[in-house]
Length: 404
Image (tube, rainbow, N blue to C red; front, top):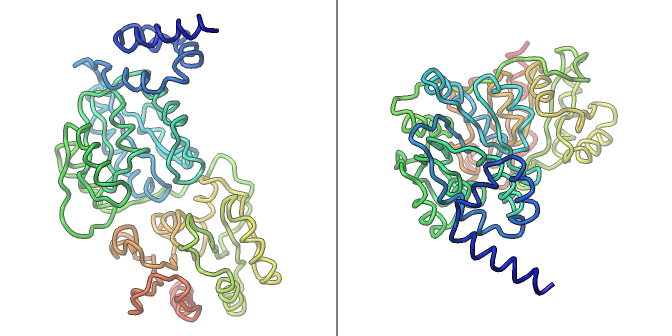
């Protein structure tokens, strides 16, 4: 046992000063699997040190986009993937996307045609900070090759899922925002700044996220991006057990990524009763696995006025179901971005946080999206509970009148 420890200590010292030997293992598929599993697994600093110093050829022809945040953030960026692809692929570059495992299925459906490959970061199914294990696994997959340029487009940069990763991906150029301190400390941001070769000082003032993304893409490409609005296609998912649904239905998405974004379930029950008494259309409750219990409770309290479909759709299927709805009512969630970008009449019950950045959309971008928020009502509160059912009901009547 002592001999084994002595051998490993000697090997550690040797590897720290001879990264070329690490490359022999990591750049070989067979050696890579053995070396990572048997040796580097418990030596993350040695692993990371190698990638910080791994050389990149001037002839490298790969581009990497690092976009690992939530579903809604992806939906407000994904239209620029085509623009980036059209810029680089005709001149011989390959374009890769490093994304969040939570929206993998949707990205594969929508954006595979624009990209040469994907890498997926596991953040625990939500937007949590990835742990060291998942960071190392993510980097080991990405760093099988090197990159000419990396774009990390987040205005609110993160450390664990952003700057730290960018700093350990071998590339000749790294582009990013100077940004704000919403998701990382000043110390982390200053440390992260050192990783980038090109940092863009953003335009001042509040700006809608889609336009902010256009700003960084313009900086990255060296030419002005002029996409008019975020859009999603009306498409048929490869598998959808709910496809027999006709187009005469209303969707309600009562969940959200944070409890503070959720309108009380009792309010949804009251609203559903009002809609059912006024309208003959079928009402469906939708959501992911995290919303199954919530939707079931609301379904039971509504006594047959709404049916729960929660947990029965992945993201591609959810998009298809939303795109065929008469109208959608949702908290601030991925569903409301899907509805807005599909052109479906949508109502968002919104507590007003980061007002103007993610919601509401500029009217020209989503004229069918209506916002119910305490701020708009002049109550100067970000408590979603303060939005009464009567206010949402008024907007429902307005949409239903237009729809009819």
